[in-house]
Structures are given as structure tokens and as C-alpha cells.
Amino acid sequence: MICFALLAHDNESMLAEQIKNLRHYVPNAKITLYNGGTNPGFGQKHGIPICPYSRPLQYGKLGRYVWDMMTWLQETKADYKYFINLDSDVLFIKPGFEAFIDEMMEGFDCMGAHMQVQHSPQDNPQFYPGMTLWKEWPKWQPFFQTDYFARYFNPVQIYRHSMVERIVAETDRSRLEHLLQVTDTFAMEEMLYATLAMKYGGSCREYPWDYTESLQYVRTVQPITAQEMKAAKSQPHYYWIHPVKDEMLQILSMLSMQLDLKK
Image (cartoon, rainbow, N blue to C red):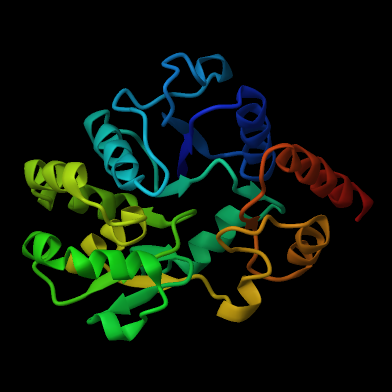
């Protein structure tokens, strides 16, 4: 039902732990890898498909990885219901995610965290990635052909298979390739696919979270603590947390499973 598109670039042991975590909490999902690092052999020993369009990516410029993964899945006629992108610092913490997204996606084509729709730089001048896109809006507006852009927080954006088909089929591939090569927009992956989904008539929603509360469990820089992970497990609608960095991913994954056994 779910196809996870996991972006990672180094640390084989952490990749192994994340795969173990996904298989424990979302056992029916297909896991695919985008190797964003410089070692062409990275990830090959874990028994998951690796996107052949993988290439080294830079921090803040990950926009093309979702496009490459969507394109590859379409070319290979992959069977899935939901496409979901993952960062290497996402950790799942409880079972039930599949039933949750089936419920939340009823009548919708995509879902993501901390959704925005901006029509001008004044809508949210504190949002840095958006401000970098507004600076380049003369480049991107003719491509989008909209007077707005939409935004989801990068990890765990969810798109129906039919929405992926529309994005790949209706997007001007050569124009997008050029824009991705020349853009200086920061975190374009947060704006690009949500905007295309909305442009192509998709019904878009955000996770059923209170924004301020959600920052305890899903945020950008400050790593999630063990206490925050435990709190997230007790809250409805929080099935994953971000960011969980380096060896803490293994520690919190093991702790989460131990807490499950005590119930």
C-alpha cells in the first residue's frame, strides 16, 4: 500500500536501523532508497531497491530527489497506493500508520505537515525557504503558472499514486530539470510538489495536528529527546517524529519498541 522513498547518503548502520524501524512499525510498506551521497555502493547490502537516478545532493538543495523517485516509480510501473518521502532522521514510534493515512486521505490526494499557501512574500516573511522562492519567483512562476505556491514540511509528505501519475505526466520535464539545476531556492522540495499537486487539481490537506503542539515532535533543527518521543507515543495522530539524529535513532527506536512491550 505504501511506498517509502527514503533519502540517505552515508552511515550504513543508521540506514539499517531505520529500515528495521520501518519494517517493525509499517510492515506492509515497500522501502526504496535514494542515495544522495558520493559512494555509489551505499545502501546496496540492505535488500531494498535503489533509485538508478540517485546522485550526490547538497544540503538545502534536495528538490530533485522526489522528482527522480516519482519518475522512476512511474517508469517501472511500481504498485503502491501512497508515495511517501522520508529523510534519514525520521523515526516511526507506533503501529497503525497505514490505517491512519487511509482515514486521513479519504477524499484527499496529498497530505503533509505545517501546510502553507502563500500568495505574496508578506504572507509569512519569517519562513526562510519561502522568501528564497519569492526572490526567484520570476523564474518559477512561468513554470507553475500560478499566483501562489503551496508548502509542506519536507519529511513524510504523502501523495496518492494517481497524484504522482499526474505530476509526472503533466510536468514539463526539461523545464523542471533546468530550474532544478539553476535554482538557489532553499528547500525547494518543501514547495515544489505541493504546488504541483494543487495546480493539477489535487485536494490537499495537512496532518491533523495543532501547529504549536506539533513542534514538540516534528521540527527542523533541535533533535527530539527521549522524553519527547515518549510523549509523542501517547498522543493521537503522531506516528513519526523528526529529527532524530545519528546514534539517537537507534537508541530511541529500541526504547520505543521496549515501551510497546510493557503495554
